[in-house]
Image (cartoon, rainbow, N blue to C red; front, side, top):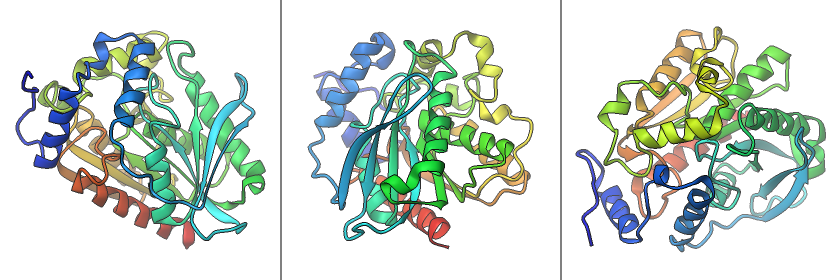
Length: 321
């Protein structure tokens, strides 16, 4: 077996994980077509074989969207019965091209169990079949549905949060901006897990962590961008690159998870600083030695366990207040 390319500074827990992933024969995303990349992600996640975190109930259903029905998954915590619960609207990562309700089932379960809230995970449309701004339109439709029809799934529509990882974090940031500009729905919290906030793909961390830091390489981000955006000009649209929004004031408090060894590192830090400068309450936590996509790697990576626990505490405090 060829030794994997692992850059300096990666945490020992992740060295083990990345070595195991390499042994499975996982290919760089950017050498695959979108269908193959999706299949590889589904297969790779399935190889973890970690017992699912126990929750009280899981319900798959659809909600109406601008391009047809949107598949969603509802998680309720153990012992919640029919109680009305505060809710997190969650969007999975995957560069707006790969990822699904299944690949991020572990995240939905973990946040539901640890925070004690309802989680509504959204399977939004993705590129290249449905390019920008289709994902944004689906995300907005999901938030509007939750605010108007949340009672159908036992959600307290006065206590809502948005969240996501990577591309899903992108959608969460955009929703917070859109909801502010539209005068609602009112949001209490943003859970931003290494969010993709600048599709120009040019921050210095793209050079520092270009290769050797997991499956998200600098070239992978270009692949995602080229499959998601209609053309390069879309990268200047704040709905694709929320870092470029002209106004970040009056947004809900945010918990921002930063992976140290991540091509997105600098833009995530810049976004947190932009929010802070705009007077938004921001809790930024950087995890040393972590690479992009570490958050779901609970059990195998201690940093992931810590990140899930701290994110859940922030979520619980925001929603239960």
